[in-house]
Image (cartoon, rainbow, N blue to C red; front, side, top):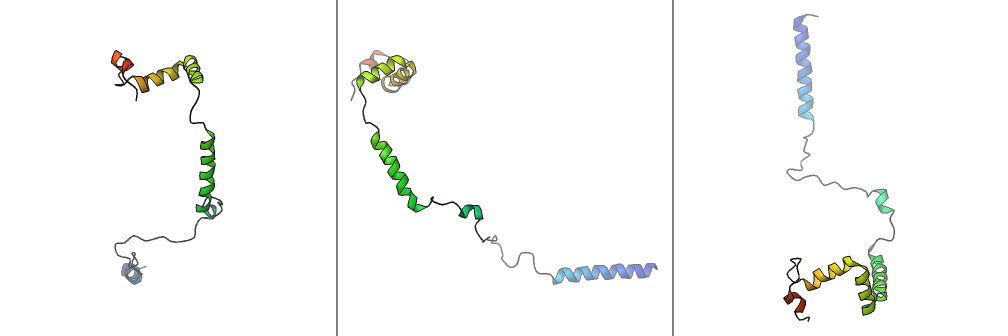
Length: 117
């Protein structure tokens, strides 16, 4: 093929590519600066769950209320004293929480003799 014919063919291919690019629709599809909102169907796995809607909240609350009502509000002093004797970690937590007022890890006479309200 002659060099002039090859150059003309190459120029024709470039011109056809430019015309095709100019005729194609714009890349942003006229939405401006707003991002595209994706809408569609929900995933099938999401729509198969049953019993987790607004109407089931009352059953869960009722079950929790029944459980809380069954728990006692108080316990015997003898049981608590025995539990503190048998469980030194519990005794340490009670003393540090309720007796050691300044939380420094040391008990003073003022802390031991302060009035309880």
